[in-house]
Image 1 (cartoon, chains in turn brown, green):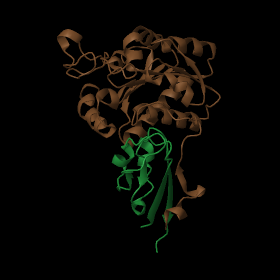
Image 2 (spheres, each protein chain N blue to C red; image 1 turned 90 degrees about the vertical axis):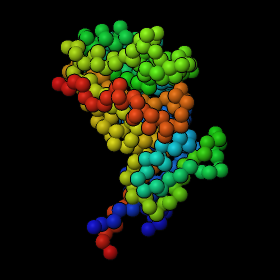
Image 3 (tube, helix red, strand yellow; image 1 turned 180 degrees about the vertical axis):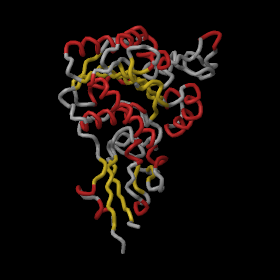
Image 4 (cartoon, rainbow over the protein chains, first blue to last red; image 1 turned 135 degrees about the horizontal axis):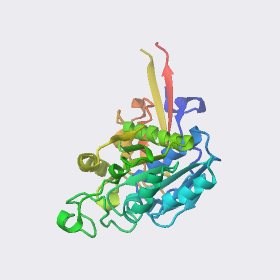
Length: 253
Length: 78
């Protein structure tokens, strides 16, 4: 059979999600943000929540998330996405409210909002993209940067005595009474993407069912900031990032 | 055993040539264009070895720009 004979609508098993906007993303080639945007668009469509979802966009590389996924969005001030999501969900209790934040947004400037929203048990889903670097501003050190990792502001590598230790904020959120589901995933292989999609689906369902705050951390790459090719940065992530940020569920009740 | 055949189409203009699909493909179907580039200057991916495709959608799963469509047919035993 030739490819022309196979390429017919009835044989289609995968296509671009309907809810992804037609415009091209501004992300660098191979950026994990694109994969996570795609699985969120697929999930909202599959769960039939197109008219019932409000996303909260962060400041960071994903600041234009509202341009790419065709649902309602609110743009929050830097780090304040969980606080904005709290208000949105309290005013619209029947809606799915989720935040989409990077590590500079959630784990640095927004630490207080994140911890208090999770501690109050707000019925929101928090998607946390952790690539260990400030991608948008040019690759500076983030709280999640690994020890020894070279960035624009730690050109000789991060030092514990000078810069402190990499912050595992997901581990901080897991013991809080307000959280119901805390997990860490990645999107570097097809199997990992499927698992991450299942995790985000569970987080969305928990938010809809009013079970508390769900946090899905996605350990990601920033190939421009790390100064590697996309394929190489996936390998580097599996080798180094997973040691500090092991994958799996931290809490699931 | 029934044989599975697949095919992919790639949106050349949208592809950023990140090579993640090339790495993810279990049957080495995809490659980046060695010389040709799209309007934005990226060496886009193409099916260099289309006969080997099994339609597993691994490439589409890892594509950050959602520019791959996957088709699959199950052929009866001959």
